[in-house]
Length: 70
View 1: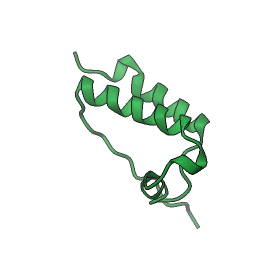
View 2: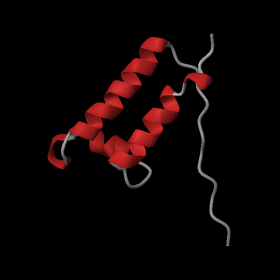
View 3: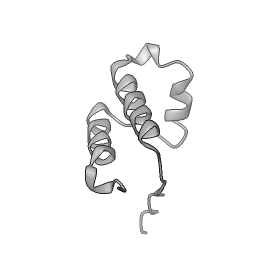
């Protein structure tokens, strides 16, 4: 039996949106388990939330300048 493919998203965002997404991810990393409040519901909507290490990798991918339009 094959694994289901992970759903991927391709979106176009502004520089402000880019900065806000990165800030939100870093804020999530800094919050401890008990201070994530209702955001936990969003993060757990499709399974286990990303670990801090996975968020680091995601931030690097998001921040990669080769993905930006000029």
